[in-house]
Amino acid sequence: MAENTQRRALLALTSGLLLGLPWSIPRLYPVIFIAWVPLLMLEQESDDDPNPYTVFNYAFLSFLVWNILGTWWIVRAQWLGAILIMVANALVQALVFWSISRVRGRLRLPLVIPFGIVWMGYEHFHEAWDLAWPWLNLGNALNTAPRLIQWAEYTGIRGATLWIILTNVIVLGLVNACRKKAWQRTAPLGFLLVALVFIPVRFSHYLYDRFEEGEEMVSVALIQPNLDPYTEKFVPQRYGRHVDAFLKTADALCDENTDYLFGPETLIVEQMDEDDPTSSPEYRRLLEFQARYPKVNILIGVHSHQKVGDPVPPGSRFNRDKGFYYEAFNTALFLAPDARPQFYHKTKLVPLFERMPFVHYLRFLGDVSLELGGYTGTYSDRQDSHVFVSHHPAPPSSPLSASSRRSAPTAPGTCRRRKALSL
Image (cartoon, rainbow, N blue to C red; front, side, top):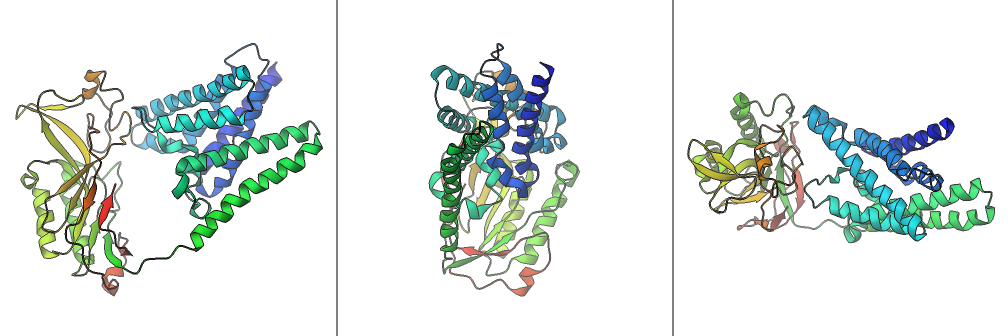
């Protein structure tokens, strides 16, 4: 009994380690194609176990290791929130895997059917509900291998998830055939595995190699300040200095040919009133900068808010000094030449940190959150689908001047023209 427990624990830990490696050491992404095999072996060997929750218990151990390896860095932002999220996500994943096992056992289905359908359904659902946590969607393990997944433009990220699932199931079949010495099954399974790996990779390389850049170009200045988000970025006394440094760098990079200036998320931390943005000193500074470069389109991140009336939306805050309710947003601000400011609100908000889960049903949670990014409370996820539009598209630009390519905490460059920026 003790040996059996040790073996199962080892299988669970091995799967957790292999699942987490592509997130902690991205160049090891190939291990994702065999990462599920130990856990699937454990699931098969637990068919006759009298404890119906054996698979759930070991799956939780495996997924907890995966969550720790994949999202350990959240501890630096808020250790309590990180622990809660890791445990909660591992519990959800274990419940999903246990459901896959129960469906396979009760209906006597081939493993690939419930595994593929239930897990992919879980990933879709996990992007939409209030505990959305899409970091560990399987397909994301391949995000550092763009040459392998060019076909994702047709299938989406779920296509990569399905590819990983199918590969793991076939590898499991090969392992089982070898353990049972059923050599007659190894040849067709081996051929199927080679085809499953080779065909998508070959098609992806075909798409990658035939891509051609367009002729029209735009000149872009991209600035990412070198600030530690945990110790520097959100210190109130430094907000103004950070904007000063951003605009100083932008002045050194932009010229009369610059079409777009891109800045970081929450460059302006102090909340901006979307109905009266000019009341913000930092907004007025952006307008002054744009006046010097009237051709440039500016896209940066800000904190913003909108006043609300009755009925007051869940998660709204109350301004005690001025006596009104408002919704706060993590916002992208787009300033096109001679046009009204355009605001786009982030809707995929980090649970517990940026938005309290289920605040629509438990309104009191709107006043409770963990501190992240200089803001406490819950952001609103209200947003109409739209794109940013530049009303005066610039003509094709000349290549960036040598002065724009100097060493700086910036990545200037050129890209193909787009008349609308979509988030």
